[in-house]
Image 1 (cartoon, chains in turn purple, brown, red, orange):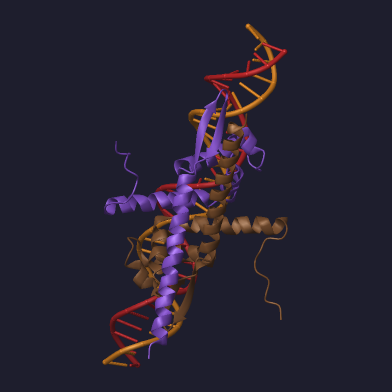
Image 2 (cartoon, each protein chain N blue to C red):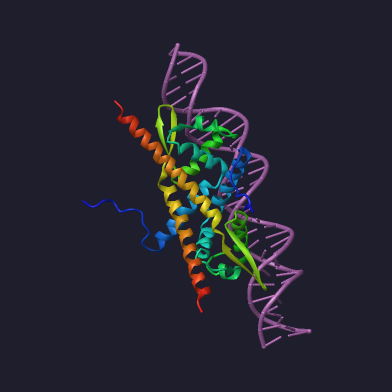
Length: 122
Length: 122
DNA sequence: ACAAAATGCAACTTTTTAGTTGCATTTATC
DNA sequence: GATAAATGCAACTAAAAAGTTGCATTTTGT
């Protein structure tokens, strides 16, 4: 049986959507508090809002808002356990972002190489 | 003679600074227009503001603001050539961001492995 | 010298984001 | 069943960001 299609860009609208999705991931990581939350969660634990709040200087409701931003970017997921809501990392989008930065670096390197060859040509 | 010290975190204030610097880089990439500018610039060219504006839907002044955001994050650099201002990619901060995402992914993988071992223990 | 091109600079509006406070709701515990 | 813990929800303020318009400045080319 065929596996469900992966979210790969096929036409221009998909590319646009991919670009927006990526920008959303970067924007989610583009805040010191959220970056810290991700750093804590990448240790593998599933932590409650109260636990995550303990590491910050802002209110619990403020942390909730940051977690929502991360969730809308697909960086974290929540699981309800009794009266608490546990948050854990979802590394797929982070991996996609990492690959993007990888490609940018590689393209830059290739461009530099071509410039060098051009400069050396007689 | 010793080379100048690399910007490596040594104490808590350095770590905080590093975190803010990183968040600034992610935030700079966290916008579709800026992400597109970076994608164009990573081809190696040094492009003017007018050239970069041609790829967007916003005004030249708007593009200038986006370039300033990228520049303050250290993602791009400008070189003045006559009456125009050419922009080019500076891949160092992007590489730092990539490494961060790499570490997050690795830590997550290690955590998963430990969880698996724990589940298999008798 | 003059006209066009490329950009800089500043004021302004609109929208989004960050963070708070106050109170309601759900769930575990004694 | 009363209470404490963990969270949800909504309204609100303040600050930052995105984008525009208008005009000044610098540089090139004829």
